[in-house]
Image 1 (cartoon, helix red, strand yellow):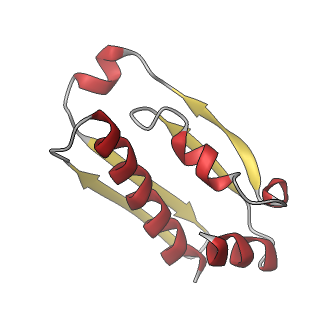
Image 2: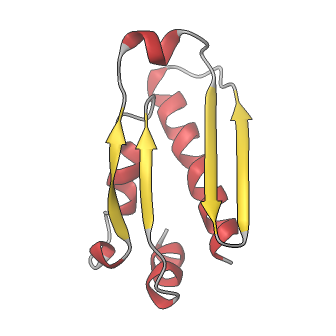
Length: 99
């Protein structure tokens, strides 16, 4: 995560998030490092039971100047595992977009 933090700051890129099943965990991870306010603009959470459980399905999307990607995933973990897996996919896609 520290290399992503450094790359975002060095390249003067910004990040905003919209989360559901992760319950704000992605925003929390992205703001863990000191200086994250240089790149993190904020986020929104939609956390109704209907939105989270209707499909048991996760979409992660990145819209960057040189890369637009949508990844569809289904995880078979428990609640905590699904949150972590979703955030992991988002961080991986973000790191790829920043390279």
